[in-house]
Image 1 (spheres, rainbow, N blue to C red):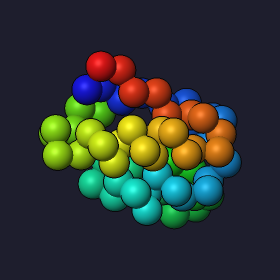
Image 2: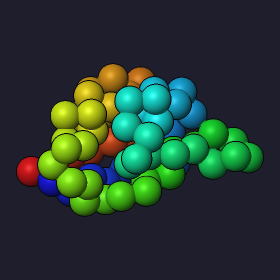
Image 3: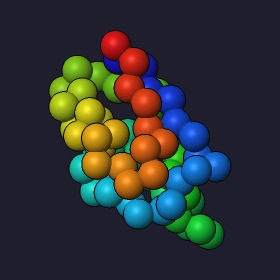
Image 4: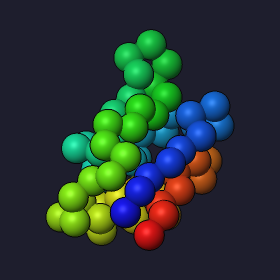
Length: 64
């Protein structure tokens, strides 16, 4: 799995951080998403897919 995101379109909702805190974080100054691990281990894949699915700005892309 490889993850990419478009931080410029992030609306800082923080749902991804709540679901997959080992993979996503938010910048302190504006809450925009930060990708911590672009290739997370298999144990994180379900959480990452869920985070991408519920992202209100659809900025997270998951590649097989």
